[in-house]
Image 1: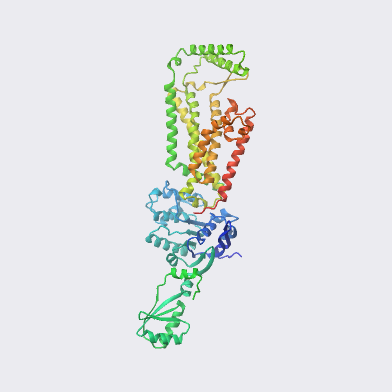
Image 2: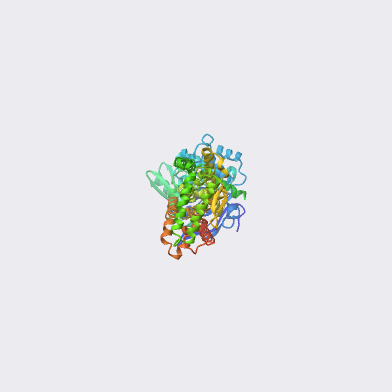
Length: 308
Length: 319
């Protein structure tokens, strides 16, 4: 069941501690070049799953393959393809940034001095790299963490709660950087977070985990489309318009609120709606979707509510 | 293999680049200076000069008297020992060697008494080897790499031993240099005297005698370092590792003396760590031999490593 395109594959990965099941038969694939979000409330099993991928936690059952190499059976080989930041990247504070990178580079074969300098430039730390890490700000440490994870040109980059403790500017920077990495270097990036607004901007696909179960994996676009939106139509006379439209599209819920026509439907119904309005010769001044945060949609999903 | 070599290199880097390590080296050198100064101040100017022979003659007379007085109830062992002492003093006078003179060898020999300090320092380093990675949070990045946990653990242990070796060599070399500078290298060929089986004096190499002393104490040191390393790997607490190792080191001897009437005491680590008890002293219990102690130490050594290994390789690193 090995999928050739996927650089990371999880197959029925399970973790039990005593009688408690922390992660229950989680399976998913991540292809090269994708930013994959791993979403769930605290304690849902995100971090446990991520730590099983990098071998910090032993799995009770299941298999994880990195580029087709089993993490269980060939740990050392599998890890040569993984770069990781697990929570805040803790570095050796009594070493300089550069010494830290030399330290991490030594663990891999073939990381040259040029590569270290290249990565330093990539994360924009050239000016401070020879300072002791204890004088670094959290943002700089985060960058050093990214540098450390990229030294050996991994195929899979794993970030566990990477935005924890970062300021908004730092978060934006990291986000743009990860997207660039995925696009240009073809790295599969796996990000775990409980910050949904972050994931929305960063990820191509999202897996939602709750109480140790993977309840949904879907693309970001799909998630945006399929989930109910509040569509606001600006017309001169909302009440009659509502009646006309209800006659034409009886399966769509509509209401008049604050002098505006509000329609609840998936994003993919908007063109249909527009055509109906044109057909009925109604003057339309604007159609917009009210910003419903991913948070609301996420809550809908985790409550097990029907997706429209 | 080069992969493993680089792991050790990394562990060494973490020891060497820490300012604390150099504070330790400073403490050791300071202690050596202090020791040399005390030896220099403490030497008795009277017996230092010409009347040392007179002093030895008087000592021998006193020893002879002791033998004569107690000849009835003294054990043959005791008598042999006293006679050996007399022979030794005679040897000194015959060869015109002043035993009270402070030479380069007195300084080097004195340096072996700093083994307690070296043990203390290396126990602290061993205690931090794993516990510090947990408290710094660096354990995660350490383990997420292309090296198995067994290799990481082994590289850390080897690196600890290398640091131990460094301190031992430093101690020896610095004391040799200090002794040479202050007392001159003139007495370097002075032999080490031991008393043979028949009470006769035997000449030996001073260097060999001192190295033997170092060797016995190094075995003791390695046992405590391994113990500290195990506690560090098992409980992730460096203070606990330091506290227990030092506690055992300090009270071990007393404890063994108190309990020496029980037979099981011979299986205790502390009863066996001091192998010099067979070379120049009496064993804790008469039924103990050097071979027995070596075996007991080996068992402890293997068990310490087994515990560290099982706990470290099986532990889930969460939180």
